[in-house]
Amino acid sequence: MKIEVLTEGSEDCPLIRLFDFDPSEAKRLVGIFSKLADGSLQSVVLTEIPGFEPVSGCCLVLRVGEKNHGIMAKGSGSFECILDMSRWEQVVGLTEAFCLSSTKGNFQWLDETSSISLLISPTGRW
Image (cartoon, rainbow, N blue to C red; front, side, top):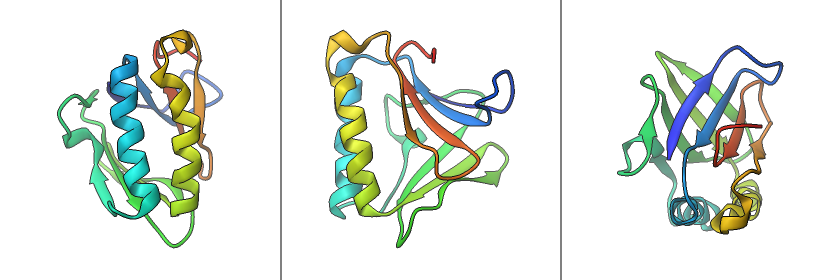
C-alpha cells in the first residue's frame, strides 16, 4: 500500500491518499484501525510498517486523541492524523469494504475533519 500527500492537481487537495493495494493489505489496515478504535494501540507510524510504502518521503502517524483533529501537517512531508476512538471505529467501517475484491474501482473519504483529507482508493483514482 502506498501513502502519498497530494498538495495540488485537484479541488480536493490537499489530501493524503492510501492506494495501490489489494484486499489482504486492506485487511491489515483494518486491523491497525481496529486497534486504534479499541485503544489497544495509541499511536502508530503507518509508513514504518512493512508493506506500507511512503511516496516522496510522506510520513503518516495515526494517533488516538480526546477529540477529532483530523490530519495536521508536521513539516517536511510529515503528517499526523488524530481521531478519537469512536471516529477510528467509523474509519474501520469505511475501510472494511476494501477487504473485498469487488471494490477495486471504488474509493472512500476516511476523514475530512481538517483541511487535509484522508482518502483510500485501490487504484489511486477518485
